[in-house]
Length: 95
Image 1 (cartoon, rainbow, N blue to C red):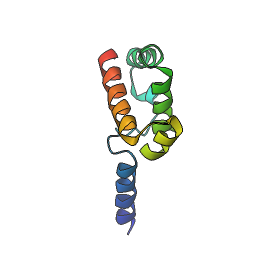
Image 2 (cartoon, rainbow, N blue to C red):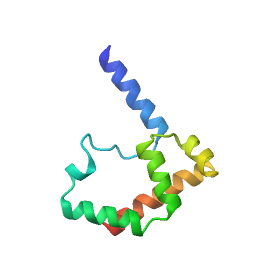
Image 3 (cartoon, one colour):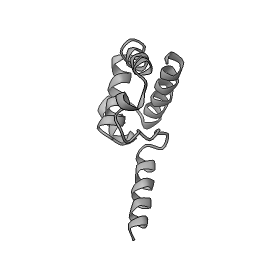
């Protein structure tokens, strides 16, 4: 029974964020080397716009759905999904 509950929560999470990368169980600063953490932090602060940073906070920290983010940022769900993909690509390129 426990396994079925775990599976259902995982599939619910996937529905909420279809393209989401699962966050590690420990904090990012603990799982990244100090140099890599600094590069990612700098990329977030200097490469991303305010709206892109806000989208990341809503997505990963607040765990809002794409629909909730789209209403909050006054965008379509497709625009939110595209923004997320673009932000992830920018961060990979910068780090």
